Image (tube, rainbow, N blue to C red; front, side, top):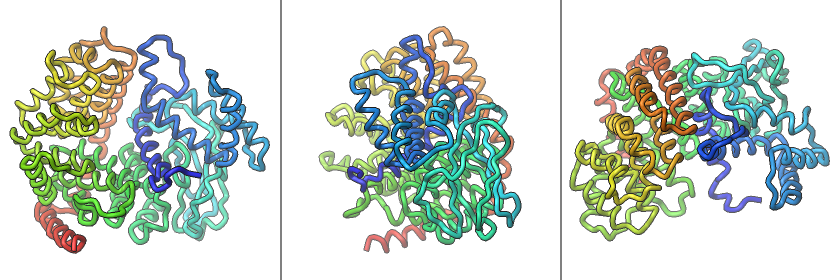
Length: 566
């Protein structure tokens, strides 16, 4: 039984899982269960690992136990521990009780399986290979996945595995068909009918908390079936494939050729969930390619993939559209306006001008950030003043949040400096619990704004720290930087910053600084290993006349928009 299944919350949870995989892919990450001794250590545990990873691992338990067993175990657990403080072992006792009463069984106790998941940081990547092109078996090995491929770890887990073949694409049964052990050699699995299958997928519905890497033959076969008939593959596995292949390429475990080949199918994808996965991959590429000779080609590539979605979704909500469609629209509009689709930028600016002319009108909240950002990226002081005053006069906390995020998009140096100073100004009109949003929004808005935000943090951290509602505010700021800093120059600046402020860092802030170091190191490795290939692929597929190509796509979009809005 589900409440409001049309909200598709369990589908959306896969995007949360994929998001926390990024956070969890650094060597210094804490496990879900670890000792804490000080108030700052306690506060630092309230992070993506505590919430998104824990939820994802519990979701994995539900799938390997089966939903009825999991539900009965929770009933026992809640009935026996009402109003009590508990530890994980007590949950496992009651899940085990429900398992023992069922027809389902596992090769080990729940406590044994879960011990490594809860007390070790990180997660595995499974490397899956056919024994031979026409073999009836695969080999599966595990290794801890780290964003920086120059680092390594011996951490391993009990990993539940299931699979689906092209000859029988049934993704419904998510119980384990095999387990990869934390010790011993790679697992060899006989799969009857594999030799007749053109492709296979491990981890149905991305039910379990790990990544999967395939050999080139299987990646190419998956790219082909996605492009030709993507609905054959479960939408959560489409999202998984997109997320996994781009992270495998980023990590050097597979070629960017495989990642780009998979991405071609997105031109036909109409569901929000796979686009949520793609957006994360494209955001990283946008970060590392910005300012490079490949950037205009990259923009043409994204505008190509998003053209049909942009035409179909547009700016205006349709009657009876899905609950998740506004999220999908937001992704597509943000990519198009951010990367220079003139139709998107012009329509955003027209809508903002209409709002300025008639401030009492209601603009669809789902597109406000995109519309406001586009109006600010040109550096307009009038637009900034209008939105800033709207923030000051708003009594709606949701609108205030949207405006704070949008104001970080300004490209006007003077206004950006004014906005950043609202974090530390004695007379700031922004509540302390909201001030970290100013920096996070500015860092995420554009490469130029990220540099300005970084410089502001480096120069003013001692003043920022007491004015952003404690550790959660500063860690949100540092985590935003961790996802955006990519160069040796950034690393030099961060090392100087860390040395300067080490005496006042909390445990959580030190952990965030370590994450920044690892992520910058990974991006430096990425540039060395991957930039030339990515540039070559984009040049081959989009040529030197990216502006001409993009203009052609915009004409096509105009035609689609006309047709969709008849």
